[in-house]
Structure formats: C-alpha cells, structure tokens
Image (cartoon, rainbow, N blue to C red; front, side, top):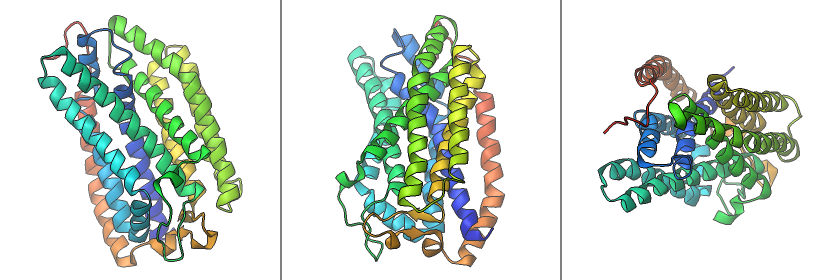
Length: 337
C-alpha cells in the first residue's frame, strides 16, 4: 500500500472514530427533550456526556486537518461545495457548546428549557447535515474540469442523501440511548432501555436501506463492482440487527458495541464505495476527484505518517483513560451540582 492509499484509509478511520464517539453524545442530545421527566434526570443526561463531548469533537478537528494536509485539492473542492452545509454544522456545534455552559448557569426553568432544546436541535441538525454531506461525496455533485463546484446548496439534497441524513440521525439516537443504559440507574435506566428498544427497529431498517442503497449508488455512479463495498455493508447490517436483538434482551453493553460497530462499518462502506475516487462529479464522471490526483507530495505524506505514528497512540491512551475515569453510572437521585 502506497502512502496515498494509506492516508485515504487513515482519513476514513478518523471520520469513523469521530462518528463513533460524537455519535452517542449527539444521540443523547437529541433525546434530551423527550426522555427525562424532570430536571434532575436532564442533569444526569448532561453529566453523562459532560466530561467527554469536547474530547470527542477533537476527532473532527483531526479528521479535517488530516484531509487538508493529505488531500488539499479534495479539501478545497469539498469545502467549497459544502460551504453552506459546513457553516450550518458549525452553527449547530456552537449552539451545543453554548448550551452546555449556559444551561448550567441558568436558574430560570424557562431558560434551562431553552438551552435543553438548543442542544437537541444542534445535535439533530449536525447529525442530519453530516449524513447528507458525506453521502454526496459518493452520489456526486456538480464539479467542472478544474475541480470547481458549480452547483448550489440545494443540489446536495437528493432522495439518497436525505435517507443518508435520516439514517445517521436514527443511528445516533439509538447509539445515544444505548450509551445512557450504561450510565444511568433506577427508573431512569428502565426508560432508557425502553427508548433503545423503540429506536432500534427504525434505526436498523433505515440504516439497512441506506447501506444497500450505498452499494447500488457505488455501482451505478462510481463504476464499482458489488464487491468489495457489499462486504462492510453486510457486516454493518448484521451489527445493526444484533443491536436490535441485544436491546430487546437487555444486553446493554453488547447493544452499545453493536451500534458502535454499525457506525464504523457504515463509514467503511461509504469510503470503500468511493475508492479510488474521493469525490464523484455529476457533471462528467471524468471530472471526479481521485486519490492520486488530490494527494500531497510523497515527502509531506511521509512526514505526516511519522507524526501520526508517534501521536495517535498517545491520543488513544489519553482518551481511553478519560473514559475509564468517568465510567461510573450516574443517579438521578443525587446528580452533580
């Protein structure tokens, strides 16, 4: 494997890590207005992701930075095409950040409710736009021979890309509910388990539809054969079905592991379907951006590889340690101040 292909795989892994980790705290955020019955239970939901949500977002920064450094031409076209969509994601993320800080300082119940809804809307909006945006890489957007985006914001919305956005929303909500089953106690725990069971079937059905459709799109619009994209797609569908089964049988840890695996395998399906291109042109397929045509120089990739080899294990160890420290369940009877 040459360095260009290696960094394509590493970029895919970084995006998968981001969705794996940020996915459950987006899911918790989306459930905030609906699952808890009182303020102490809402406090528990905020506290369950409070120590980790900002660390999870670091993966987005690293994924974006790695894309910029390893594939600058891809980064330039993608951020030009998805400018308004990415601006919307940024607004949603800012709203979420503000909601964590301002809700904890608000004493008026109405303002606390405002920031609760702000977190939920920000989580939903970011999840939806991420799904729509990344699906467009494969479905194709108007790109000319110079790699310039020639479409509008509304060109990003097609039946396939909208289903992708809805699949991400449902999968993250299911993932978040499973996470809460590992962090709560008592009556609230029973309701989180019930929420996970209710979300499991629609998440699995829409997720499976998106994965099958992704393989079809890869064949029709990216000139791919059914294999290898069908392999991660089939494994992802199997993981989602197992998540449904484990949620029904109250095997909370395994259900969370399976929604996590389904998320990672869904990203793997998308990037496997893309290879060897990184962005398909709907204007003319020959204008599509490829790994080779958008990658940085060999020396740049070599230096990046050394840095990644040294820094990545340290980041993983630190984040793993932080999850270990904050692994305890949280009771709604005695939430943190």
